[in-house]
Length: 263
Image (cartoon, rainbow, N blue to C red; front, top):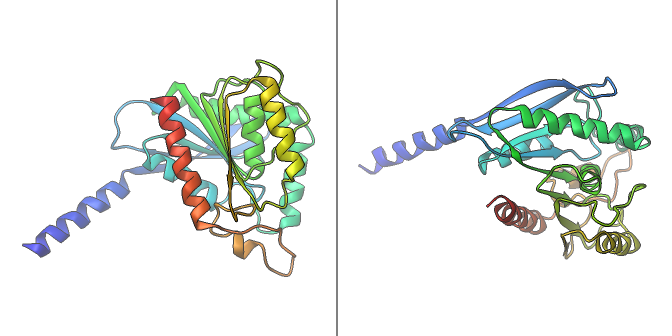
Protein backbone atom coordinates (compact mmCIF):
# COMPACT_ATOMS: atom_id res chain seq x y z
CA UNK A 1 0.00 0.00 0.00
CA UNK A 2 2.81 2.38 0.92
CA UNK A 3 4.62 1.53 -2.30
CA UNK A 4 1.49 2.24 -4.33
CA UNK A 5 1.03 5.58 -2.56
CA UNK A 6 4.66 6.51 -3.18
CA UNK A 7 4.37 5.65 -6.87
CA UNK A 8 1.17 7.67 -7.16
CA UNK A 9 2.78 10.72 -5.55
CA UNK A 10 5.80 10.36 -7.83
CA UNK A 11 3.55 10.20 -10.88
CA UNK A 12 1.63 13.26 -9.77
CA UNK A 13 4.91 15.10 -9.18
CA UNK A 14 5.99 14.25 -12.71
CA UNK A 15 2.72 15.54 -14.13
CA UNK A 16 3.11 18.80 -12.26
CA UNK A 17 6.63 19.25 -13.58
CA UNK A 18 5.54 18.46 -17.12
CA UNK A 19 2.83 21.13 -16.90
CA UNK A 20 5.43 23.90 -17.25
CA UNK A 21 5.64 24.57 -20.98
CA UNK A 22 8.52 26.49 -22.52
CA UNK A 23 9.34 27.73 -25.99
CA UNK A 24 11.74 30.05 -27.75
CA UNK A 25 9.96 32.81 -29.67
CA UNK A 26 11.74 34.98 -32.24
CA UNK A 27 10.83 38.65 -32.30
CA UNK A 28 12.25 41.96 -33.47
CA UNK A 29 12.88 45.35 -31.93
CA UNK A 30 12.01 48.68 -33.53
CA UNK A 31 15.72 49.14 -34.29
CA UNK A 32 15.64 45.99 -36.43
CA UNK A 33 17.50 43.77 -33.98
CA UNK A 34 16.40 40.14 -34.17
CA UNK A 35 15.88 38.68 -30.73
CA UNK A 36 14.86 35.39 -29.13
CA UNK A 37 12.53 35.31 -26.15
CA UNK A 38 12.19 32.36 -23.77
CA UNK A 39 8.56 31.91 -22.79
CA UNK A 40 7.21 29.78 -19.92
CA UNK A 41 3.75 29.06 -18.58
CA UNK A 42 1.86 26.38 -16.67
CA UNK A 43 -0.64 24.71 -18.96
CA UNK A 44 -2.49 23.25 -15.97
CA UNK A 45 -3.81 26.76 -15.37
CA UNK A 46 -6.72 27.73 -17.56
CA UNK A 47 -7.24 31.21 -18.94
CA UNK A 48 -5.07 34.32 -18.90
CA UNK A 49 -2.94 35.23 -15.92
CA UNK A 50 -0.59 38.11 -15.01
CA UNK A 51 2.44 38.41 -17.27
CA UNK A 52 5.97 39.09 -16.07
CA UNK A 53 8.99 40.10 -18.16
CA UNK A 54 12.37 38.79 -16.95
CA UNK A 55 15.44 40.85 -17.89
CA UNK A 56 18.79 39.09 -17.69
CA UNK A 57 22.05 40.05 -15.99
CA UNK A 58 24.88 41.57 -17.98
CA UNK A 59 25.90 38.02 -18.97
CA UNK A 60 22.99 37.94 -21.44
CA UNK A 61 20.05 35.61 -21.94
CA UNK A 62 21.54 32.56 -20.23
CA UNK A 63 20.18 29.53 -18.40
CA UNK A 64 19.77 31.49 -15.17
CA UNK A 65 17.37 34.02 -16.71
CA UNK A 66 15.45 31.18 -18.33
CA UNK A 67 15.24 29.34 -15.03
CA UNK A 68 13.66 32.38 -13.42
CA UNK A 69 11.03 32.44 -16.16
CA UNK A 70 10.22 28.81 -15.34
CA UNK A 71 10.12 29.63 -11.63
CA UNK A 72 7.58 32.37 -12.30
CA UNK A 73 5.54 30.03 -14.47
CA UNK A 74 5.49 27.61 -11.56
CA UNK A 75 4.00 30.37 -9.42
CA UNK A 76 1.17 30.75 -11.90
CA UNK A 77 2.43 33.60 -14.07
CA UNK A 78 2.95 33.97 -17.79
CA UNK A 79 6.70 34.68 -17.97
CA UNK A 80 9.00 35.81 -20.76
CA UNK A 81 12.77 36.09 -20.41
CA UNK A 82 13.62 38.72 -22.99
CA UNK A 83 16.75 39.22 -25.06
CA UNK A 84 18.33 42.65 -24.69
CA UNK A 85 21.46 41.88 -26.73
CA UNK A 86 19.98 40.17 -29.79
CA UNK A 87 20.33 36.66 -31.12
CA UNK A 88 19.97 35.24 -27.62
CA UNK A 89 23.70 35.77 -27.09
CA UNK A 90 25.31 35.34 -23.70
CA UNK A 91 28.78 34.84 -22.25
CA UNK A 92 30.64 33.93 -19.08
CA UNK A 93 33.52 36.32 -19.79
CA UNK A 94 33.08 39.66 -17.99
CA UNK A 95 34.83 41.70 -20.68
CA UNK A 96 32.48 40.36 -23.34
CA UNK A 97 29.49 40.88 -21.06
CA UNK A 98 30.55 44.47 -20.40
CA UNK A 99 30.87 45.11 -24.12
CA UNK A 100 27.40 43.67 -24.78
CA UNK A 101 25.89 45.76 -22.01
CA UNK A 102 27.60 49.00 -23.00
CA UNK A 103 26.53 48.58 -26.62
CA UNK A 104 22.89 48.59 -25.53
CA UNK A 105 23.19 51.07 -22.67
CA UNK A 106 24.93 53.80 -24.68
CA UNK A 107 21.64 54.59 -26.41
CA UNK A 108 18.70 54.77 -24.00
CA UNK A 109 16.21 54.82 -26.89
CA UNK A 110 17.56 51.50 -28.18
CA UNK A 111 17.40 49.92 -24.72
CA UNK A 112 13.85 51.18 -24.23
CA UNK A 113 12.77 49.88 -27.64
CA UNK A 114 14.17 46.44 -26.93
CA UNK A 115 12.40 46.23 -23.58
CA UNK A 116 9.18 47.44 -25.18
CA UNK A 117 9.45 44.77 -27.89
CA UNK A 118 9.70 42.09 -25.22
CA UNK A 119 6.79 43.53 -23.27
CA UNK A 120 4.68 43.61 -26.44
CA UNK A 121 5.54 39.97 -27.16
CA UNK A 122 4.50 38.91 -23.67
CA UNK A 123 1.26 40.87 -23.92
CA UNK A 124 0.33 38.99 -27.12
CA UNK A 125 0.58 35.52 -25.60
CA UNK A 126 -2.85 33.94 -25.10
CA UNK A 127 -1.93 32.98 -21.52
CA UNK A 128 -1.22 36.61 -20.60
CA UNK A 129 -3.73 39.03 -19.11
CA UNK A 130 -2.69 42.20 -20.97
CA UNK A 131 -4.04 44.37 -18.17
CA UNK A 132 -1.80 42.77 -15.54
CA UNK A 133 1.85 43.18 -16.45
CA UNK A 134 5.04 43.46 -14.41
CA UNK A 135 8.79 43.02 -14.82
CA UNK A 136 11.75 41.76 -12.86
CA UNK A 137 15.42 42.23 -13.62
CA UNK A 138 18.83 41.20 -12.35
CA UNK A 139 22.01 43.30 -12.33
CA UNK A 140 21.87 45.10 -15.72
CA UNK A 141 18.28 43.90 -16.01
CA UNK A 142 17.41 45.50 -12.69
CA UNK A 143 18.42 48.85 -14.15
CA UNK A 144 16.37 48.13 -17.27
CA UNK A 145 13.14 47.49 -15.34
CA UNK A 146 13.70 50.51 -13.13
CA UNK A 147 14.10 52.65 -16.24
CA UNK A 148 10.86 51.18 -17.59
CA UNK A 149 9.17 52.36 -14.41
CA UNK A 150 10.79 55.78 -14.70
CA UNK A 151 9.35 56.08 -18.21
CA UNK A 152 5.83 55.33 -16.99
CA UNK A 153 5.33 52.15 -19.01
CA UNK A 154 2.04 50.31 -18.32
CA UNK A 155 3.39 47.99 -15.64
CA UNK A 156 1.71 47.23 -12.33
CA UNK A 157 5.09 46.75 -10.71
CA UNK A 158 8.80 46.13 -11.19
CA UNK A 159 11.33 44.27 -9.05
CA UNK A 160 15.07 44.91 -9.21
CA UNK A 161 17.45 42.29 -7.81
CA UNK A 162 21.00 43.60 -7.23
CA UNK A 163 20.27 46.04 -10.04
CA UNK A 164 21.89 49.22 -11.29
CA UNK A 165 20.28 52.25 -9.66
CA UNK A 166 21.78 55.11 -11.65
CA UNK A 167 20.24 56.56 -14.80
CA UNK A 168 20.72 59.30 -17.36
CA UNK A 169 16.97 59.93 -17.44
CA UNK A 170 15.75 60.32 -13.86
CA UNK A 171 12.10 60.07 -12.94
CA UNK A 172 10.07 63.25 -12.74
CA UNK A 173 7.13 63.99 -10.43
CA UNK A 174 4.24 61.77 -11.43
CA UNK A 175 6.15 59.85 -14.13
CA UNK A 176 6.41 56.58 -12.20
CA UNK A 177 3.16 54.61 -12.46
CA UNK A 178 4.44 51.18 -11.41
CA UNK A 179 5.05 50.16 -7.84
CA UNK A 180 8.71 49.38 -7.24
CA UNK A 181 10.56 46.82 -5.12
CA UNK A 182 14.35 46.99 -4.92
CA UNK A 183 16.26 44.07 -3.41
CA UNK A 184 19.81 45.30 -2.80
CA UNK A 185 22.86 43.63 -1.31
CA UNK A 186 24.32 45.62 1.58
CA UNK A 187 27.83 44.50 0.51
CA UNK A 188 27.36 45.34 -3.17
CA UNK A 189 30.61 47.02 -4.19
CA UNK A 190 29.24 47.86 -7.65
CA UNK A 191 26.45 50.05 -6.30
CA UNK A 192 27.79 52.71 -3.96
CA UNK A 193 26.16 54.20 -0.89
CA UNK A 194 25.92 57.44 -2.88
CA UNK A 195 24.03 55.59 -5.63
CA UNK A 196 21.56 54.30 -3.05
CA UNK A 197 21.05 57.72 -1.50
CA UNK A 198 20.58 59.35 -4.90
CA UNK A 199 18.09 56.68 -5.99
CA UNK A 200 15.96 57.11 -2.88
CA UNK A 201 16.02 60.89 -3.28
CA UNK A 202 15.00 60.54 -6.93
CA UNK A 203 12.09 58.25 -6.07
CA UNK A 204 10.96 60.48 -3.21
CA UNK A 205 11.03 63.56 -5.43
CA UNK A 206 9.09 61.73 -8.14
CA UNK A 207 6.47 60.60 -5.64
CA UNK A 208 7.06 56.95 -6.53
CA UNK A 209 5.54 54.08 -4.55
CA UNK A 210 8.67 52.10 -3.78
CA UNK A 211 10.24 49.81 -1.19
CA UNK A 212 13.99 49.44 -0.80
CA UNK A 213 15.27 46.31 0.94
CA UNK A 214 18.92 46.12 1.98
CA UNK A 215 20.07 42.54 2.55
CA UNK A 216 22.84 42.01 5.07
CA UNK A 217 26.05 40.30 3.93
CA UNK A 218 24.83 40.08 0.33
CA UNK A 219 27.12 41.05 -2.55
CA UNK A 220 26.25 41.86 -6.14
CA UNK A 221 24.76 38.84 -7.90
CA UNK A 222 23.46 37.36 -4.64
CA UNK A 223 20.53 35.54 -6.32
CA UNK A 224 22.58 33.59 -8.87
CA UNK A 225 24.04 30.24 -7.69
CA UNK A 226 26.69 30.56 -10.42
CA UNK A 227 27.96 33.88 -9.05
CA UNK A 228 30.75 32.35 -6.95
CA UNK A 229 32.08 30.43 -9.95
CA UNK A 230 31.77 33.41 -12.27
CA UNK A 231 33.66 35.65 -9.83
CA UNK A 232 36.81 33.56 -10.31
CA UNK A 233 38.87 32.48 -13.27
CA UNK A 234 41.82 33.63 -15.33
CA UNK A 235 39.73 36.48 -16.73
CA UNK A 236 39.50 38.18 -13.32
CA UNK A 237 35.82 37.99 -12.49
CA UNK A 238 33.69 40.75 -10.96
CA UNK A 239 33.05 41.17 -7.23
CA UNK A 240 29.93 39.02 -7.04
CA UNK A 241 28.77 36.16 -4.84
CA UNK A 242 25.78 33.95 -4.15
CA UNK A 243 23.95 34.31 -0.83
CA UNK A 244 21.31 31.64 -0.27
CA UNK A 245 19.54 33.48 2.54
CA UNK A 246 19.34 36.71 0.54
CA UNK A 247 18.22 34.84 -2.57
CA UNK A 248 15.36 33.12 -0.75
CA UNK A 249 14.37 36.22 1.22
CA UNK A 250 14.24 38.44 -1.88
CA UNK A 251 12.20 35.85 -3.81
CA UNK A 252 9.67 35.70 -0.96
CA UNK A 253 9.49 39.50 -0.97
CA UNK A 254 8.81 39.41 -4.71
CA UNK A 255 6.01 36.89 -4.28
CA UNK A 256 4.35 39.02 -1.60
CA UNK A 257 4.79 42.11 -3.80
CA UNK A 258 3.08 40.48 -6.80
CA UNK A 259 0.31 39.06 -4.64
CA UNK A 260 -0.38 42.56 -3.39
CA UNK A 261 -0.39 44.32 -6.76
CA UNK A 262 -2.25 41.63 -8.67
CA UNK A 263 -4.61 40.56 -5.88
